[in-house]
Length: 171
Image 1 (cartoon, rainbow, N blue to C red):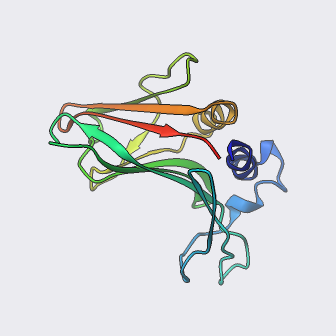
Image 2: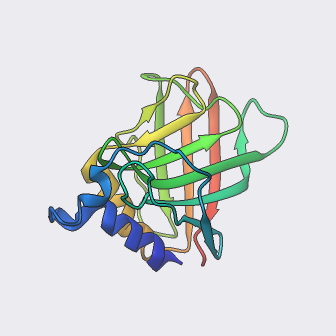
């Protein structure tokens, strides 16, 4: 499944080729219930946008082990590899507040590889979602994802405490 997720990211990133960037060139309005295929822990969207006729690029993992220093027990979180407004991105969503711009930081580590701290990320207005949008940061993330089994993320925030989640990348 890591190969499928890597293939999705390869399409998203296009490896610098204009033909590969076609998957991110479309806008992504959801006008129908998405059809998904499951591979291991991954859910791969198999939907074609009814407006543009272009496949909707998306792969998602959902876990139930996200914890926060202000939460009494672990809750669900998701990681999604997708495109938005023509650009590849990694999106993490939580059931509790995780941080705000500019007083929060995101870090992650795949397996026993060196970790990445204070990466370029944006916390969305409702404070439960963080996205990696910088093309270089998404490329680094995707390259490490392709050869890994586990991803651990950590968010530190003055407003929302410390959040961690572990994603099993099997499939």
